[in-house]
Length: 476
Length: 99
Image 1 (tube, helix red, strand yellow):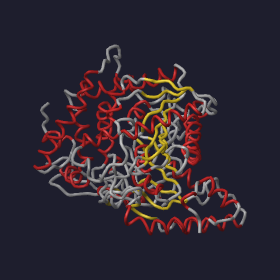
Image 2 (cartoon, helix red, strand yellow):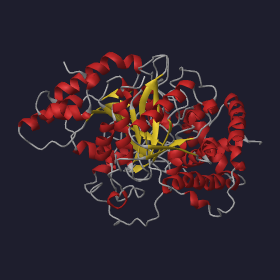
Image 3 (spheres, chains in turn blue, cyan):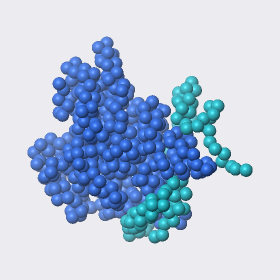
Image 4 (cartoon, chains in turn purple, brown):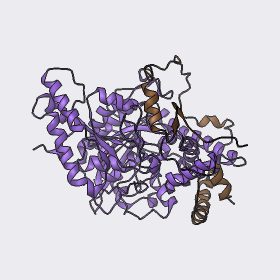
């Protein structure tokens, strides 16, 4: 029997390499766990029937001494908006219920070449719009730490699958917090990568100037392993860059950490306390701690809710019932679009497309969209100024609260949007950020801490993250 | 802020029921009120809205080459299989212009 609870990618790699377990054993253990838990948690929309066969083929290759890749036999879960050739990719939407991906996303191609096994596709808020996974057209995912609560979102299925040992690690996407917030609420590690460091080719576009693919894992080291496996320039994503030119590895051993000044009244008491404890721990580690102010942070959420719906309304125009997906017949071709989109898109997706259409429409474009672009510049400058002044990383809560109850915020979109108050500025600025569990509240719900580093300095996140992780055992 | 939901729904190509229109209108009021706070941000001195761009300033060039994506023509069939309506190797759509 494999102890899945304590297993990490690093450990599994060792066990497979030393032939203590086979790829088949490991995949089987996860498939059994999924079978036992998924009906209740609803983390997976589909479990792939060929996972076990892939594992057996890998075992055969290992037996024959063939080269099997760095991630051979590592069972992963993939968010339903990342394309795996031949598999359904629905973005948890009715409009793509029967859509089969016609090619592999670049991140999938890289993971396949590294020998990883895909267990299935995970639930999410439809087209990654949401903070609770309740916007899925296929039912909400439940938080494995408390089944009456949400796992966060939009990568809630991926976070829940990692937290419930229904996979060893997962991929998600992060446009305004969709990896970090669910990681925080489920008590796992989530990494939002620097804009341009990981290819988005084959990730269904939501807001292209914000979207990034990243890992959800059980510890920081695994996040680093997966990041290294998926990163790199891709000619099919013109926004991806040559990391040899930009990536900065090897963080200094003594860091200058900026603690974000924020309104403590807007954040749960126990989250504030966990922040304080983390600060003490960072000091004990020998790092310098100073308070920092991001003056335009208060504008980041309204700014985000202009730019993101604007880009969404353009990106989702492709779903018209002509080339793929649901198609409904109307009176004429325009009416076909209207009927198809009206029926195929869920409420939140329609809301955001309408909002985006509004802020881009004649007469409002300058007041909303252009203004938001200028504010985005200010938000980025705030980070830049701090980093230029010698700050190595900035810490803040990932989420203002721990996991909230299912149904608690579904009737109030604005309240739901506020769940991302600490995460959206990072996407606006394009910097990398890591959420890691640093404690629990009195109900036993996980609390996440967010570390933000300068562009292409994921190395700082991994260094500080690992140190804090080791210290977390001593945190309450 | 007055929002013409009917016009917006038409522009967005989205069908809404009357009940949904009412609900959206109410929610839009709250959301637009919130994002309206941006007005308070001092953006004087930033003339070019492109200042907010996310990408690194760098020209990206590549050969205009289809690689092996569809060398054998197989991919055309894979793509056509996903289309709701096809005819003779084409995606079929209704008339765009009417007589």
